[in-house]
Image (cartoon, rainbow, N blue to C red; front, side, top):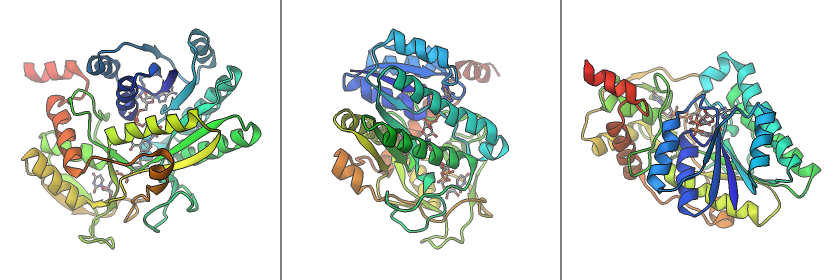
Length: 346
Ligand code: NAD
Ligand code: WQD
């Protein structure tokens, strides 16, 4: 059963490819490498001992996509490809709308052209907007506060319209909470460009000595210690969620949103402490003002994924921190071997 994975060289995509290969799926991976490295693909092959086709291709290139569908018999698509940096989306919204939305439109057109109607889509808990009614469940009203979030919301709506028009489609909208951690091999993980925007990659770089200290964005939220609470989910649990969603879309028709989270929330201070424990390093931090657009508390009600997909997160905070740390320590410059070489030469 061949599965096309768009954005498969990225953080979540690469971990999902490992789980797909381990579950004996045949995969075809497409990525333009705009936010990832070919080395991630090599490492997926190394971890699993399995080979697969990789196309360095942009979703916006319809002709290339048609070639991929002609060259391979595809049964379903897991669609990760997209740009994801909230701040950048505010600065270059047209680029975000074009890449994420036009890319998805072209993908759907080509899928329709080749009679492929099964899709698992990377949505985000960001579609709950400023909603403070935790735990967040799928029936809550949705909204978005930045162009990135609006692309996710618009794509969810576009895919719903696609299903209304053609009931033979089957689509899972996976609303991820905060993915963290890395594969236990320490060979693949999150490799942000420049200074990380997200908490765990930032903490990791402080622990490894690349950044001097962490800025904690506000300690005046209505939480136990005043810092923001999020539902951090281990990347391998998240990846397994895609296999479960795939199984579901393969045997049904319809469109469904599922939260993929643990149902537990941890504060920024709790994350710092957990990471200190996992790494044995001190994480210096400074409290500064709230980050604009942040909410105080976000965590999932994941009971729908539990009952309908037979999925629940298995790994806890210690695994998340231990695995992030192993990846960081083994790959201080991410996938960029040349940079590691430079550093050794100095
Ligand atoms: P990532 O940037 O590591 O992976 C996305 C991949 O898509 C990258 O490899 C990039 O090169 C590729 N890509 C982007 N535009 C493309 C295009 N036009 N054609 C071909 N390839 C393209 O990000 P990730 O963290 O793995 O996220 C995967 C998906 O999950 C994204 O859609 C993201 O919005 C969504 N998501 C991520 C998070 C998170 O916190 N990481 C949370 C919720 C949702
Ligand atoms: C977590 C907590 C911060 C960095 C973002 C996107 C969301 C989704 C996941 C894709 C918050 C605090 C952070 C730092 C800090 N991505 N923090 N210092 O904001 O929940 O979600 O990534 O869909 O769309 O918005 O994740 O990791 O940035 O922040 O104090 O340097 O850590 O204020 O409380 P967030 P995050």
